[in-house]
Length: 386
Image (tube, rainbow, N blue to C red; front, side, top):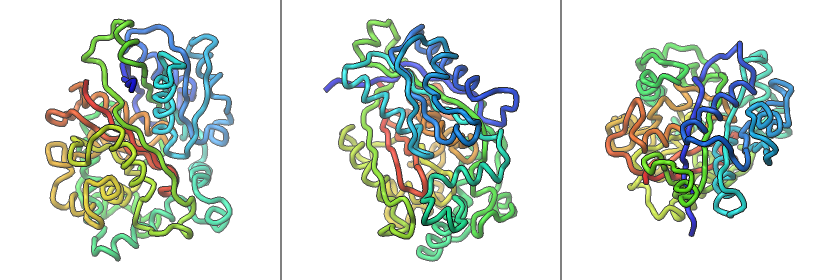
């Protein structure tokens, strides 16, 4: 079977970019990725984005961004899978080159969230939930995750302090990432003293509203050789998986089982020919601290109910057995929703090239997991050092 390799990566700093438009961020990331790969043209563009329509009144992003990036008359399309749009777009790019229909594609994830009132942004984010069963009744995205967090603590006996350890770990790694929104380490007390946004979820249990863009160049090994890209730049996309679960929590079989993540991971592991024990680091979707715990369990890194235990034991640190959020994750790097899955992949590429500011020792295989909704649409991608 043909393989797909990533040969270029680029990203913008995550933050509140008041002076830059969505198109500016996207173009900056694309040009950085193309420069990294040493190329001046691509065959197609895949744009990962969740809510550009309500946020900045702009759709037709494929045409907009390809035009402003000077990519010519190429095919270009927007990929939307709620907060998992980035991971989904990476997979669409991989499938495009594996099909043989396209030789070199660029995937860019972009979101401009700070141009709207915070109350409006909160409402737009809730579009990832079930409009008739949840949003109609006033259940925000934060509220739904708060329900899951309370049930997780009650079921397994964890405390708010236990889950705060995920935020502390993310900020410790993000402090060394020049692209992260938050570059300051925090203590458990910082999390516990932060105000509640939806009890038991506190401000420091949640990822921030922000802007950013990240991009990747994907091709095949044969084309990479033809383009003259040095092999040390290559990172293989060894496995991909994607699955859905019920969009609303009321119909979920088990509130504490991220079934879509479990199924997606099984598909990615099978394609890559690896097991959870082979993964050197996990970039999980920690939009909320409880989701980091549930993700580790669904991905097979921890047994059921033991995800938070890994944090308590110090096993999620950069030099431990299960490093997560190696450059800050959604919590400290930031969560520009539609772009997040591409950021995760760029960071995994840097780890596997040995170029990360917080380097996992001898990293050979990395996993990225991107969640849409409250676990309703999830992608898992496995990358391998060439």
